[in-house]
Image 1 (cartoon, rainbow, N blue to C red):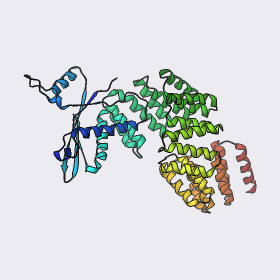
Image 2 (image 1 turned 180 degrees about the vertical axis):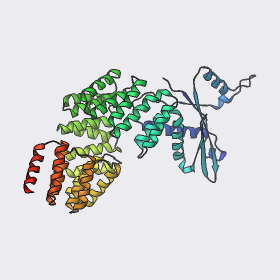
Image 3 (image 1 turned 30 degrees about the horizontal axis):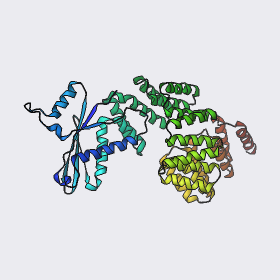
Length: 459
């Protein structure tokens, strides 16, 4: 379904601004530039997100002789006659005490005014662009807010609800899919699946929803079901590169490397400059000790986008795997400096720093990791080990308990915490930890039964 036409009239500006070449048409062009920036930052394979405004030319104001009707009025009436809904956007600028006040109007909706210094014009238009998108493509704005700003999940969810309750209805499948992605990121996989299915009910051919559904099934370890959903997605669109990439990740996880490699290569063939695909393929190659091929993938990522943290993070993993801690630390720090939010970068860098006895810097990185994600259990267990090295035992116990509260399924966490308690002569507490490990079925019950037996004899 084609999008409804968006009409943007040249903004009204005072003469003082026009003398500075800030004309009404120039402001509209700058507004459109901001909308394009938002579009570029929304990573979605949906192809019907084109925002195509129509600029009124001054010649459209010419009145047809003998009729008293302008060409603009005739054009509007003709389009309305054809049943083509139009969203009209206008704006005006007031200059007061050296400040710009830009008022944006979307016909039928409340106007909004943005203000600032002339030097802040781009920021003003950035806010105005988001306002325009609320009433033209709320889904696009929701996607942008969620994936490009910290702590903007609530705003994104508001835009999702706005999208679902306002025209155009063809955005609804995308809105449900984005909501499903948010639930996925929260670890609510069953809820995400319900939302993906809602999207498919609205648009049975929307491949993004199938891919999301399959990925949630994968997280739930329902691999056979995920396979069937990926097959359906691939049947609907054999050229969808994301399907191949996500499917390859699952094949890799199920120790089917050759099948995974084939799918990664297909994804990259379809989208050669997609740094996510190149990094995913590189990580799979690294897992199977194909070091040279992995290095080529990671270097390609940086070649395509030297300002992205992804390539440096991947190279950090490469050197970490090769036990070159100097190079690994350098690349992890570079990824972090570029704004990486991947907790693994912080954990690995902190581990290397701790090995170098640079505990203060290691703890700073782990504290930052906790701020980024307060529910990642390994951050707390890593902090506990550093505190133990510093002989801050009570603080270490607090960190171990926090880690275990967040995830009680990691065998190594029970082993490490149990050893720590034994070293602290807290045999009773260690005994309880080992018994809990058995109850939680963390694996390797022989080890824990042996430890329980030893401690019960000693006590």
